[in-house]
Amino acid sequence: MRRSVWFAALLALFLPILFPSPATSVLYIDINAPGGKRMPIAVANFVIASGDTALSRGIPKILEGDLLLADLFDIVPASSHMEAVTPAHFAGTPLSFPAWKVLGAEAVVIGKVDARGDQLSLEMRLYDATQGTLMVGKRYAGTSRQVPSMVHRFANEIVYAFTGVRGVFGTEIAFTAHPAKGRGKEVYIVGMDGQNLRMATDNRSFNLFPRWSPDGQWLAYTSYRTGVPVIYLRNVSTGAEKELVRFGGTKSPGSFSPDGQWLYVSVSQDGDSNIYRVRVVGGDAQKVVEGIGLDVSPTAAPDGRRIAFVSDRGGSPQVYVKTLGQPAELRVSQGSGYATSPSWSPGGDRIAYTARVEGRFAIFSVAADGSDPREVIRAPDADCEDPSFAPDGRSLVYTYRKRGYSELKIISLDGRRERSLATGLGDMGSAAWSPR
Image (cartoon, rainbow, N blue to C red; front, top):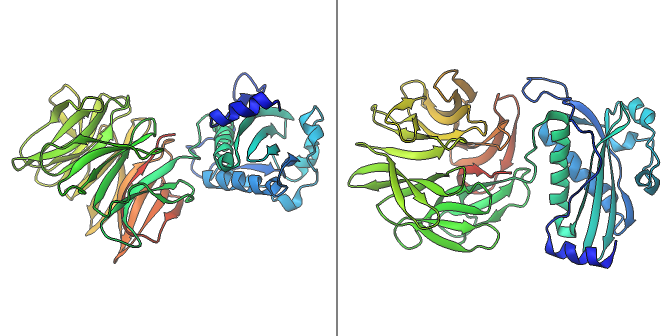
């Protein structure tokens, strides 16, 4: 690679270059079909043009881990691969697709690494082994530390090629927990694969309710570090902060508007808690839901025209939907028990929430008009709380609590697949899934 290109790589996170691919995508997997087809896929050892030879198998391992998390693929074991990928396969020599088909692989991923010091380029290609055609190819350039992010991006391309829906690899979850040492609660961030756990705040106070901006660059959260609750905006990359909401008593962020211009918040004043939207730049506040009693936990629908929120106007906290600018408000949560913590699906068709059933909290979802209620997860001896949708709408992250123990879990919306995301911290909760 020319020297000028390497200098350009220092200024950009990635340099994606699209290789020729079919003009229209063919959908091989229906992500909405329970127990549907899983695609057998082989990830060959990568060619190392220059650099650490450990990358030859290390990078495929990252990619395989992503594909397994998608629960859409079966990995053909590397120990069974019969064809060694060489530099010639990146210069016009075709793969022996019949040999890959013999192994049961319907798709094959190959890759090539060219590293010079801390800089590298990573080329990855996805082939349809049945038709022998290139489905997608990408080349990324950056630092060695950015390799996982490059691989996550290509994993998303693979999911899209087979489903027509972008993957969520590389997204993160913000949450709150007691630190292992110290006091109070801090905001933490962890990758959706459970990697790269880190603290976003460290002020030994109570920091609560982290919420992502639509571009993933900012977190809104409530902090008591000055002695009174204040809502701050924190830049995830730089750590820079600014105060956004100080008026009123108890306050918490609900969600940003889809365009990122407003933050919906609940603020208590004079014994009531009402819902406002506050302009992110300028701080202007507009009341959008008011009444006697409790109105909290606002979350904006993806269309920007509706919000879901929690109110006790009917006697107990329940989830309601309001179309902005209209007086009518529709209750969508079912039953007579306690319901809270609404989260909109990315498609705007469903709302997940927490409900109390037989003395325990469980996770439910419901259509935006209140129809078609479904139980997602209920534990007989534990509480399941605070759901947040993944950006593809297929999964939820939630808090599992049992007798002083807590952890974050990810579960598919149909409740069929579940895995642990993060453990080891005290009183984990208020999880929020980042955008793509």
